[in-house]
Image (cartoon, rainbow, N blue to C red; front, side):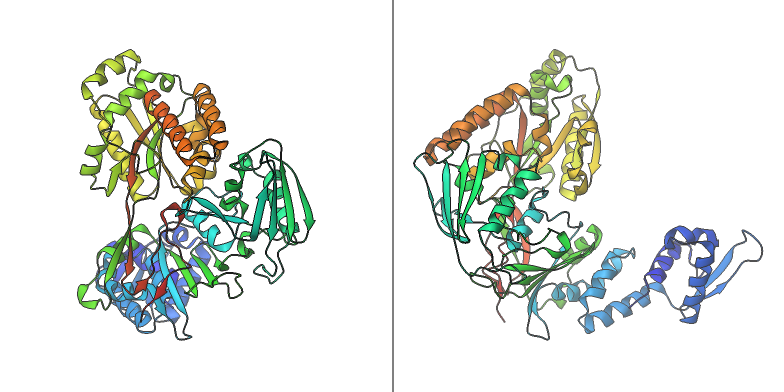
Amino acid sequence: MMNERYISLRTFLYERERNLECECKIEELEPIWFCTKKNVKRILHQLMNRKCLIYIPGRGRGNISKIIFSRPFKEEIDEYLQQCINQGNLEEVVQMMRSPIPKSWLVDATGKIHKMLGLHTDTNEKDILHALKTREITTLDPLRVKIAFETHLIQHLGDTLIRYDEKSDRIIPHLAHHYKADHDYRAWTFFIRKGVVFHDQSEMTSKDIFFTINRIKGDSQNYSWLVDDIERVNCLGPYKITIHLKRSNPFFIRYLAAPTFCILPAHLNFTEQEWIGTGPFMLGEKTQNKLILKANNHYFKERPLIDEIHIHHISKDAAETIYFTVDKNEQTTKTSYHSIDDSGFQFLSFNFNRPLLQKIAFREALFHVFDVQKMIVELHLEAKESSSFNIGRSKQQIRDVTKIPQLLNQSEYTGEELVLFHFANDYAINAACWLKKEANHFGVNIKLYEASYEAFYESDVLEEADLLFMGLSLFSDKHLAFLSGFRNKALIFNQVFPEEAEQFIEAELFKFEHSNQLDEREKMMEKIEAYIRANYISLFLYHPIVNRPLDSIIRDVIPHSFGHLDFTKLWIEQ
């Protein structure tokens, strides 16, 4: 293993290095190694003992020291990478990809590194899927999760009582083998499968369902709307439970398919490092830089066909180097791209706490400013313009730039700076920069506010943001997703809706829940979307079409909810 401190030293001094020699002050090395001057000297002597360098200390306080390295840095990196690749040591390769070395140095090895990724069989005959993620995994707590990918992972770790079947648009039994409702949809009784075990081999019973529901009721502002109607829960035996509601709600059964209702064991306190559920995968490891899922051999339904999933955290630069600079002569398998066009939509939301944004004329002006078709072309987006939550209902919207000056004048806009919140990923950054450029062209002054995914969990974002460039990924159950989009107060844009709009939408959603007819609910969804468009409550932008690169030997690539892939169905053809 190459010493991380040595890599950070070489990277730090690389620009000033001449013929393997460079000069520096000891004080300069304290921040890169996060240690005192005394420890800096100790580390340098350790590297000398390993024959990595020669350290010649400067005489007197503050004098410059000299460091002479044994070999060219790139030569050492190339040799070490080749050694790791030959040994199949992906862990060390990924660590190198996280290090601050110039990412161009990875180019020569990209083909070989690419072959180490994807799905392959190790020496123990385990099929392992390796994937890269350019950000850290956030929370996997069902009560606090707000990010689509993390929710997708939770769906593989845990199970719900019932599931939504997209093909038939109906609810099917899962942990419960049967369910029934009384005549007015206020009492829902579930008959639980026997012999279902958690990852720790304890049996799941009605007490675990009771515990999970109470956990949501007692500790979830984010998802309180899912349990607000629950009046009480009665365990009628270890394999039978009834949920009583305060009011009639025919749609309630679909709530229970939401990932929030993944059943957790009553005898354990939930911890993210030891995620215990009943799902097809178990949590093998969760660190800052790596997440491992392992197939659950005791799963009550069909076991996953692959054995493990390893998700590695690396930098954006390293990921782009690996995926977009592959040496074709090194490839032994072809890369196929699986297109997923049902992965949600991007939109612009307004902070209605701001007086300027309460003016419909200003919001309409921004609608005409942001020509989505132009945006798709100029940013080379794989996308379809959005006018709806549902890509199937979306159509191109007509914009008229000649209206912009009059609308801005009508709104009494005088050049105030507006802060646009966006996430710190390439797609969001590029889109936000484009939005700023277009706005400036028409005299609207926008400042960009780049936030990490962790900031999505912080309540003070709205103190800074005027505009929110957001994305919403959808459940496979589009009607539940529609409800969640408005009711889930964990979503930042839901916290700043104008009161009048909130009242109108909530009245329609109440009727929506009480309709048993799919066509009726679709019409109500269209009515709400038309209201949003007519009043410019939010601006629909586009539906991204996601292309996921996978080796062609991977079979049964099936879309899952939130625009991701169903890990339980993947397998390798050798």
